[in-house]
Image (cartoon, rainbow over all chains, first blue to last red; front, side):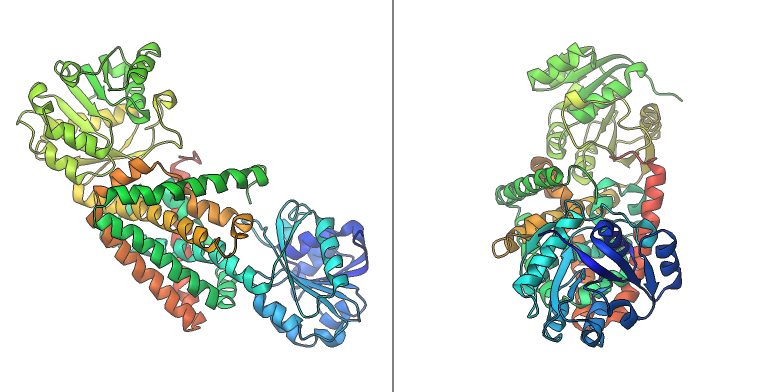
Length: 297
Length: 297
């Protein structure tokens, strides 16, 4: 079954929301944009990203059969936990793109029965944000995790899968807890390592300022995530504390093992520990480059 | 004073040594290559990288006025601590490119008086190794740390600086201990973080194998160094244990501070801690891209 909507609403006209609006242009009779920011609304209208805009949530969603929540995690949680349940028509498909899923799926599960709510997290993005960078191909060939909620009927699930197919995304279904553990490992832990590395080098620079002149490609790559948007990362970390703390504990064990071998001067053991990890990294990297066809996102 | 040599010997015909030979072509009347590997010697001769090759160290260095040691750290240390002092003529300039400097500069300092020995570490490289990837421009616009030894006379220093100028490198002078602390921060610590991250994700994959499907650009960059050559990294780490252990302790403090704020749900403090680190990373990154003109090494 293909995806179709009479009126689709995107709540939050940032990079992700506006890109979804563009990607779903041919599938919805009318697209409505909701945003508190007047300049984003104007941009959306002037560039034909949406057909209509409003800053009033009720007005924006009440006649829609599909509503996509495209905002930071806690903004989505707050709106879903608030009045939106009273505004939505029965059978409306409510989806979101929040980067952590437990809180959002919890509050989605408490919406009025009849609302078809499915949590989601598309694994895509750009170095730049904002509606002016919207891109209809942002979701093509990228994984999009779908997480069931207590309001995800079989019909809701099928509609969500059809939407993903329409934007070209690869559906990966798992429950919210599992998703949050996975992203803690592959995304939130790397961010904290990257930031802590910059903090350590900045600290070392107190005694040896040459660190900044000599740092090169290795430092650049390992520290890149420290340049991520702080409000976004703070929102993500704060809604995934438990899983992040668990991963940090696991990381400390791994780092400690390597350090022990190094200090014990047990070079054979160190080499034996490093070899399979190098292989794992290279195999993953080859798969990843193949999967993304060398596009850099 | 420009750099000039009647006979220059490169000991070790890998990427670094062969690239040096190419870069110094116009400055030496004759270039000799020393390597135990017959295929590297053949390649060097057939491609005009050196004029002469040998697998005999004494034969390779005894008539030279410049000798460049281009091998792993402990191979360089072993050769310098061994017989080479007896083979070299007085006033020969002996330099090296080892990635850690304390051990090498120590043994250089015990060479016979009259040998002009200067430790060094050019901050350059490629993703690929081997003589077949040799590149005359490998050192252009890259920092090259020079470390004085007890055998670094003012004349030796001036000759070393002239050699760096000949290959286009940017000289940065500091003592060996300071160098080793700096690279522990910007290179060895990032490597260990990268490897430990891969180990942690591989561990998490036991319960949630989806980590490999969902890992994307953030994981790719943060884990890239885990793909580094293990024998090389093991050589480097093993000759810099003290400085690496110190940096690991500093890193743990920084990571612990962030984790404490996260667990304490002190988001204001977390944001205040992240903000200057993001700024530091972005300022360094802008400087680095400018300095390297966007070339990726």
